[in-house]
Amino acid sequence: MSDAWIDIDLDAIANNYREITQHLSPGARVMSVVKADAYGLGAVPVARTLQKLGCQAFAVTTAEEGLILREHGVEGIILVLGPVSSEQMAEALEGDLQLTLSDFYMLRKWEAVAAELGKEAKVHLKLETGMGRTGFFEKDWELLAGLLKESPHITPVGVYTHLARAAQRDQAYTRQQVECFQRGVKVLEEHGFTGLWKHVCNSAAFLDYPEWHYDFIRTGTLLIGHFPATAFAGKLKLQDPWVAKARIVSLRRVPKGTFVGYQSIYRTKAETQLAVIPVGYADGFGVQPHFVPQGVWDFIKIVIKNFLALCGIYRGQETVTLQGHKIPVAGKIGMQLTVLDVGDLSCETGDEVVLPLRRTQANPRLLRQYWSEKRLIAKRNIKEGFLQSYPEYP
Ligand SMILES: *Cc1c(COP(=O)(O)O)cnc(C)c1O
Image 1 (cartoon, rainbow, N blue to C red):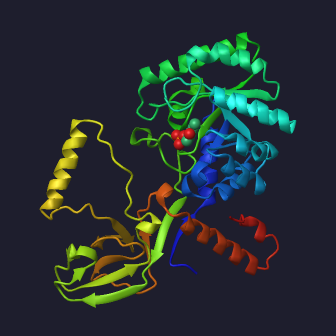
Image 2 (tube, rainbow, N blue to C red):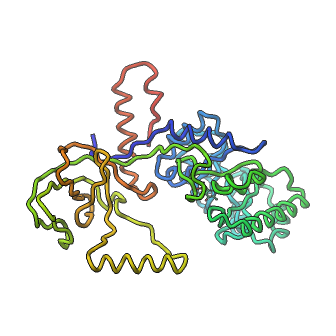
Image 3 (cartoon, rainbow, N blue to C red):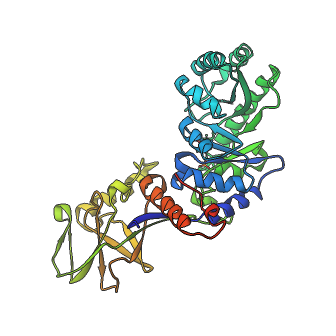
């Protein structure tokens, strides 16, 4: 039994999937994006759950992620969204992964490798329409179509693009991107590439533009119970399947004036109880993504926060939840240990606290622990059929 872990509620994910499918335009299907270990929830159990509900298409970033799904019995379409090197091609084709073709170097290499293996590479063509990451630019579409005709081992099955500002609800920019995409589809069709699956919507665009659902919508954020931005909140009835927890592993009563942690930046203001939990920045606790100010107001907020921190008024402290109360972290978060100032709250060693961990930053160890414990419990339980109800992972 571990003292820090993540609880996953697969029923909540199932609920979110059903909720999404009810808002699909006719003819469209869900491509479940389960990259980055399903945004930190466990790609295998999440994909299996969705497969049971009828999901026929999945997307990941790397070939390796796709192969892990295949090894664990995920069927249907698995699209690799990111670039795949020619060294990874053999395995990717063996695993029947569909690949994103996004530049001419790939096209040349892949055709050569697929020819050598005597295999057909099913690809989705990625069009650059304004994301500026990967994809063929408009000036190159004619050339692309021509070269595809000379690449017998490359079979386009889909065409797509990725929207940069859908979550910001920048309608003008998004429309411009989709119109560009439509011009690309037209060029391809003129060259005989008809009937390709088309997909442009991520979670935000799915909610805002039913007219662009096409053959697939690609969603990950909504499946895991989040909205792409607060402006979308309430548009679907989503449930949160994820909660990170830890147990108090040590509890002591200390007098007023006790220094806590590295650099002694925290000092107790009265007699209190200090609790230790076995998580720290090695688990992703207290780790923040780099914040880039988007305007003058953002910038002013940063300056104010830093000024208050300098005066010792604001420390940007994390809080955890214990018995429904917000409890402040005392002092600096350590590598794997963190101290909480629990005051006079009546609690004991072994009590559970809920952690504000960011999903994609949470150490995968916490998640694996959870799934392997589920598996152990399932194995111990001799009841017929019980084992099947818990997916094995990893
Ligand atoms: C991550 C990703 C998605 C999913 O987007 P969400 O808004 O997180 O649902 C869709 N398409 C591509 C290409 C992606 O990289």
